[in-house]
Length: 231
Length: 231
Image (cartoon, one colour):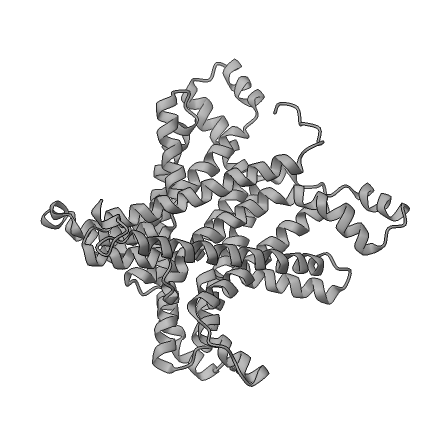
């Protein structure tokens, strides 16, 4: 029940490799998730009941279903569809990596939609009216006024989601991906040391989370400079 | 839908048992997390520097590490730890490891929610309780905590939702919960979509049901509160 430093030193490169796999799944999801989430969030705020309803269902479904179930569905499910197996789609759905990215992209997008919706809604009406009274065209009012302010309002929620998402990726081990947790578990069974590999993996996860928190915290302070107490 | 029937050929009964395991896991974890969280919040609010420092360290670790990693850690290590302390240990099943791990991780989130709510409780309530000569425990149980729950409830509801969805991960330790049963059924029947969609919607139904209950509790706790304008 003690930390075996020799073993820790030996498995650390493998664990870092696992952390690399974790990040390689996570980073594309952040990009694709945002690309999907912005239009869905706008649809969610639409006055058209059908569009708003569909967008609501999208976010409700992907927030409600555990990410693990989603990636199982994609990884095990699409392989049974003959159409998928016989077309170029098979090269996507036969790879655990792509399945993990697709599953987590939608999972992440579901949460992003709600964060963005909240952020757009917290932009004060007066600011939008001011943009309107300056006769800014709608797209300029959105990109120059509403959107930059929404980013500021939604930022701390985004930071929280990013941390939860980073930790949530630990599920990809279930579909044969050798991510940080899976590498640690493999080390447990090969070295018969149940303690050291998991503690090392926990440390790496913790360090990654701290980097996200500190990094995005810095950006948030910059974004809200005007709110800082006078020094 | 023959595969979901309740006879020997269908998986309806197995899924129902799996669902009961999932619900039990979530409920036990949340109840234990709640009481642990109460204790932790008193640590967080303590005047003692050491206990506040301990709280900060624990919160940082538990919020920075995936819950499934904590569950794996407990699954592999707890019997060794218990044997070293007590000389004997009960068998640590995946269920026990799951409940313990989720309870420990989410107790920190509960502690944080309650700490925030206590800080946001009107200072005058403390003063008034003291002015009436209430003993410290009476002040907490009759005056402060009932008001704290009103403020902490939205946060606690969120935590419950996250705990519920995190139970899906415990199948990775080998627990025969809803996800594991569906996974087996999908592999045997070669009809994965039916089972994974069933599980997905089961999770959505669980969380929507608790959402409704939470709203009722919120209504009851908010009785007598002046409504904020605009609601």
